Length: 243
Image (cartoon, rainbow, N blue to C red):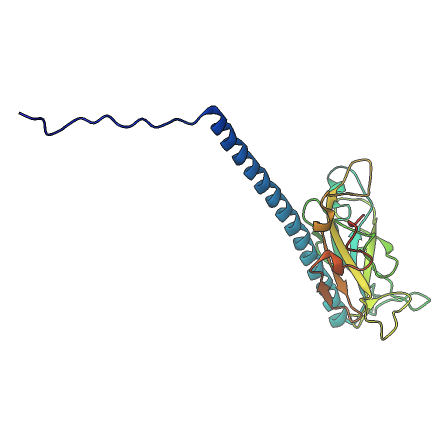
């Protein structure tokens, strides 16, 4: 009787050669490297975008407080370096201070008619994302002034940069900008970088042009986020931003 179940020998498959396997490994490694770099750049860009949005919200809050209270406010940025855990606040911790009041609730001014400010934050401050810092070099619109403010974690008031809103919610600059000036009166810039223990100036990331963000502040105190580094005043397309 014939066996209906004829046995067949399976055709042998040619195995990968060592060279082919090495080529596959190289291709996979290259793709993984490219993917990791893209993710790193995306994460960094998201960090500066998040920082700019967080700071813009704080500016909007300070402006609103000034308008509703009929008194001046300031957005402050800690700049005194520090050591240990406090050092992480350097150029990253921000808050709002208000104008001083007397016993009757009247807002105080000095002999020149300028508002006198409290050295204590009105509420808990905010901190920019890790490895993202305030760039004082590209910020301002006028020379950035400083004041001493009580910052959490310190026994004594610490030096901070500030932006000031008057009682109408307008950004205060000295000297005032011309009425027909089309440029913003203030600029706030953040940039990714690294802070070393022996230097209070952060070091820029290698791909600096992708690691910067911020917003313009107009005369009336409203803000506009920068959509590209080229929109930042004093920053040309041919150079990376510097702290």
